[in-house]
Length: 338
Image 1 (cartoon, helix red, strand yellow):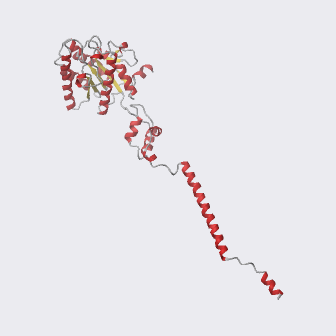
Image 2 (tube, helix red, strand yellow):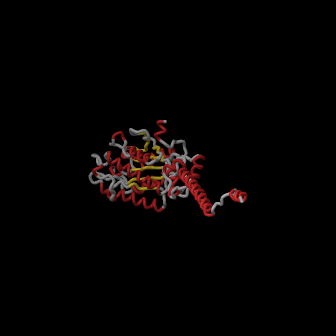
Image 3 (cartoon, rainbow, N blue to C red):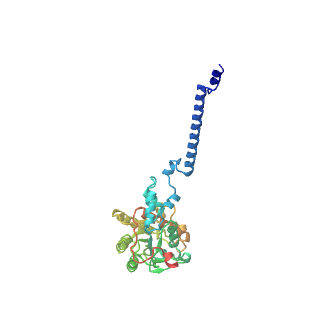
């Protein structure tokens, strides 16, 4: 009997089935919690590095600063390098960046302006301090807009660096045509800025033919410099007695002439300088000086703004073309300050 009891007491204790089940559930719960914790850590790490979690808008909106870092920024008129081409390809891979957006940021004004201001004493800037006239403020505004500018002509006049001009006091339209025939082939501008007719008015010479004569001048300019665009202004209001009615008729001739240029799609733009057309920012009699014909300083500055708007219109119409490469630098200031 004692031997039987000893053998029976040596058997291992039996573990209940319920205890085993509870142990397995605890282990499973611990493993699940550990997996969840690891997954959470991984997700947080990925989000912190930007691998995931980016807002969809980040693929649909690229700032100008980002474009600048992706695209080499050539100056106006310059040719992008191979590095810029590769960067542009990289930028274009982003679905929201169209070529037009890239180009507008990289180079807003790709055509350098080689400008010949052509005319008489108003184009010279007579009566304005330092002969700045409209030329200096016009050039400054164009540069501020991002254009590269070189003023050209046979005469240097004005207290500013890039002051070349083709203008002679007292000259009428056909007389300036003869000067143009000498100067234009040497410089080949791609933009002419013209104000002419006041001396025809004051000398009472061919006032009924100014439209025809201006057309002859402009046709010559477009032919002699084949890459050129012409911005021609109407005449300013005039305070000399009995001259204003004639101004109105002369300006009508200019506007009628423009209809012919428009019909033939020639690169000519009219810069409206007379208040009779209802413009709110054109010189009025208050902006004409005591001699009755030349603008005040404010009047010249208004002319500059009108010419700039007309040049922008020419650009929008696709008229501007790169000037012929004849050795003339693109930047007139840089040419002289070197």
